[in-house]
Image (cartoon, rainbow, N blue to C red; front, side, top):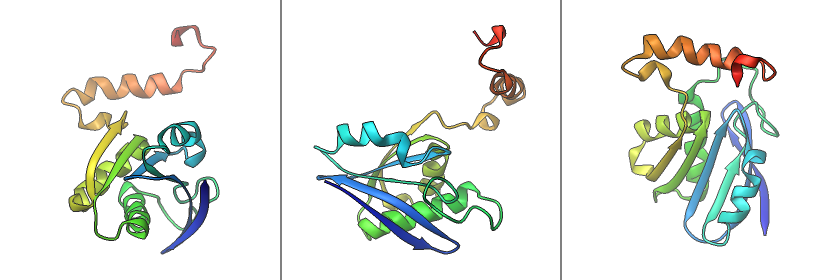
Length: 152
């Protein structure tokens, strides 16, 4: 059974989906929202209570027009969502891409709320010891068009 809802947070409304039963597992993405986790959530639902959401300004969530959307703001939103389902117990997090950055930020703000975090491909190139070499290459890779022969 899949349940959808909306959580009011300061400056936004967060659309979320819950399915399954078992330990709480939050699948967090950005810029992809809950639609990017549909198949994974269905596969995990027999073993976990899976919560997905659209971060502010994405999908069915509001709140993207009133200033910059920072990892700290998204982590505050994620914390509010976690506390909606688990006010005191730590939860499992899987963050992908920008959702990994959000989850890492939450871990730094409120480590007691995170039981386990899997941070999948966080785009944190500036933190690498060779960032001056890697960052220009990463930026160039993202600027290549899919039909560009150099992208292959």
